[in-house]
Length: 154
Image 1: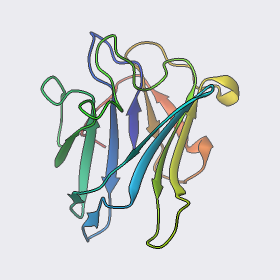
Image 2 (image 1 turned 90 degrees about the horizontal axis):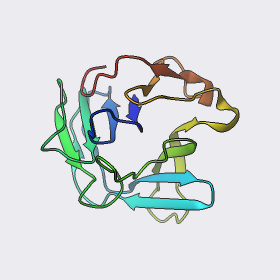
Image 3 (image 1 turned 180 degrees about the horizontal axis):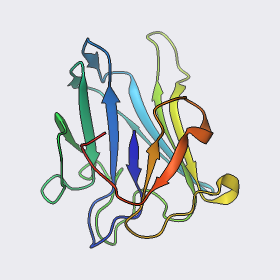
Image 4 (image 1 turned 90 degrees about the vertical axis):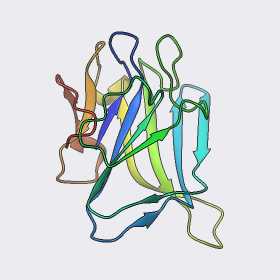
């Protein structure tokens, strides 16, 4: 629901994921993919559960992260996917981030949510701005620049 790629005050990058369902979702089979130029990074989540009607915060540094009302805080800095301070996991200028799911017995993941910034998207952020989802659709156009990021609060 919200992505921070250019944190201020040397803060951590973060990704906010909402589970609006009344049931829990296993993270096994879910993955994140970040592409910027010719570089790409993938992270396969192998364990964990996101409870129903909850908000999860994936962060580059849980010790310095403002978590708001997040139910779950997951450290992706230790896995090298999200950065903190001068360490970028997500590209500041241009990139694509996808939340993907792979069905059992399948080898190709399907994008569930995808956000792009920079390039032709008209989404150019300055330090301290985030990308937020409008909550209405699942298209690339459903993302906008948020002047007041709110990690852990939809």
